[in-house]
Image 1 (tube, rainbow, N blue to C red):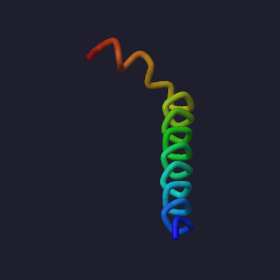
Image 2: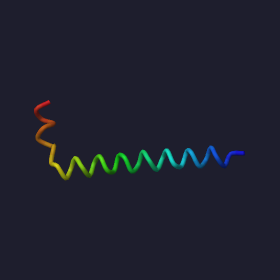
Image 3: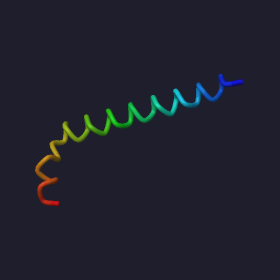
Length: 39
């Protein structure tokens, strides 16, 4: 009964982790660090 719920939870967690990882990598690659100081 809990298999579908666990699968969805794992997929959501994996999606969030990969999304955050890609966002951080893109930010580090583009070098948007100075732009933050302007804000």
